[in-house]
Length: 162
Image: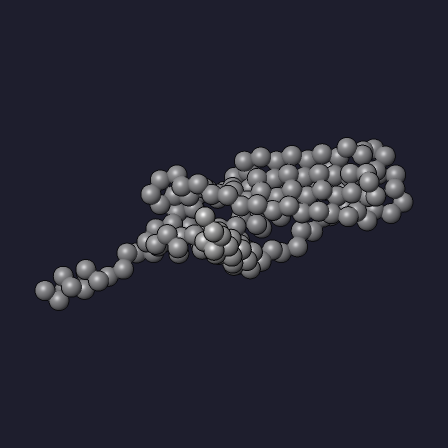
């Protein structure tokens, strides 16, 4: 009887793991070449756009896609443009929906980012440009901020007169 009670109250086994890592899409453009290489000083202004999306494949497998777009300009001229969709299949089991959303919003992009960073750096160098070092990103803070913004939006919608 004690064993039955222990089994009934036992939590499901919690598991998180990266099953597969892959590039869904990669694009590199250097529309200013070859003229951009004649500039005496290469100090581009860069703009980074970042987005994460996920989809459930089956009960415990989720695809997470980390999309990064980097636009580097010297003045008005585009030096290079890199677009990458770094993806992975993650096994996530034993968590409730709220916990799973935290994992998908923090752990998964944190796991994908180093691979995306290396891919982008390599593409930029193979494009003829100096090493491009993408700075670390705090996905925990980004997730927390997005949750706060979502709560504010829901509160604003709830307080609007109908």
